[in-house]
Image (cartoon, rainbow over all chains, first blue to last red; front, side, top):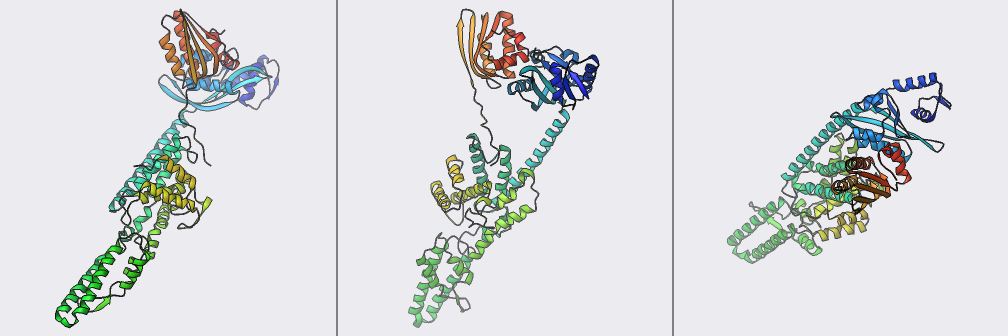
Amino acid sequence: MIIFIQGGLLHAFHRIGMGAEIQENTMDKNERYIFESIVSDMSDGVFVIGFDGKISLCNKAAADALNTDNNALIGKSVAMLMDEFEENDEFFELLLDAVYTRSKVIKTVPFRTDGQMRYLRVTTSFLIKESEKIALMAVISDNTDPVELFIRNKRLANQVIGLMNSFVEVMVTETEERSAYNADHTKNMVRFATRYLEWLNRQGRLTEFTMENTAPFIMSIWLHDIGKLLIPPEIMDKPTRLGECMKDVSHRIEITKLMLKMKMMSCPDEKEQLQARLEEISEANDLIKECNTIGFLDDKRRERLKKISELKCITAEGEEIPIFTEYELESITVVKGTLTKNERKVVESHVNFTRDLLAKMEFRGDYRNVPMWAAGHHEMLDGSGYPDGISGADIPWETRLLTIIDIYEALTAKDRPYKPPVSSEKAFAILREMSDNGKLDRDILASFCESDAWRD
Amino acid sequence: MRGVTDQRERIINMDIKMNSASETLTLEIKGRIDTKSAPQLEEIIGSSLDGVRLLVMDFEGVEYVSSAGLRVLLIAQKAMNRQGDMKVRNVNPDIMEIFEVTGFSDILTIE
């Protein structure tokens, strides 16, 4: 098809992209008829503003989209339309953008007439031919139905996400509150993280995230310790080295003391020897009580414990038994903390359970990385962490941040059973040492510290 | 590296100097008249037109006018139609092009 048209219409037609081969010439009556028929029958609206600022061409679809009569548009200027359609500056802005940028601008904008809101997809072009400005052209299609569908879908998606968020929040909070210790661990972490992300955003430094993207990250914090549900509470919250076994040990010692005292009465000959044994067992009792709650066990105490482990207790039946069981001896002589090697392994396995539990749930789209971020919170940059011992670039930004916040919260928590809280300064000193040793991300740590998001 | 978000707070990048002599009010405007700054210009015009017979807008320092800016010009022109004249001076070529293609050159008196 060859169409001869002139001036603004040539370019208008060319830009509409009808696939016509265009030669510039004077348009005769028939050709103009053909051109006008095509434009008028198009389902997209088209209008052209000549450089005199007046609408020189407009089809019915354009007039319909603007909810007016096409005869009412011909000859009008943008200024007149602005006066007529008062609340639609976003639409007019598009026309200006094409002039300012001298290029095609495509955007969907709301358009309000007679109390109705429509969404118009508008393509505007500023037409220049041989450095002569010709016209401004707009192609309009009514996108109201798809946009409304999109908005409705978005609203439904938000409802689902909102429900999921609140469900996770309630379940995790309630579960943690069952434990007498550190019931607010996750809640505090979420608070620190939310504040930190807000701070980054205020600084214009939210380079790692877009704001829409923070919800999945917060979700991964809520869920990071979900695997602890499967760890026996007596191990998870073991407050002292001996834990529940302390009662057994005390009981054993008390019986022994009673037995010794009785023997002293029935065998006055052995009184001196029995008295020495009674004192020995009393001293052992004091040492055990002391060491049971201690955070760090020095070599001297450890040696003394080993020595008293050779002592024998006496049962009510008069039987001689060791003062400690094997497990009790291992527990009381742990160097740091309250957990034996096996118990530590069990506690550490909570990240495996987190991963296994979350793997059974469906996380998609923006939420697809939640299980990975959550399950990786004990990995260290130098590969010394667990469960997978991954390192460096394999640990994403989100996990690095989660790890730092997790450790900070754990150190400063006021209700941990097995160690007293440390001050914020001390906590950051410990974190910095860890980053100096290549375990934590130095930049994220510095930024988190600077943000003050961790303050109570 | 993921997407970088812009600073949320946009800064008003417009400056207005007012000169009033007898019944003439001159506004020397500098910068951008956009969605953010247009309400400020509208407020200044709205509160300063008492007894003004000639409103002169000096556009020498204006780099950009958005549709919100055009709307303020429309409002100002309508107000001055009732009480005198309005003139827009020293319009740069880019903005002149906008005035022409939108038909504002027919409505405004541009010097």
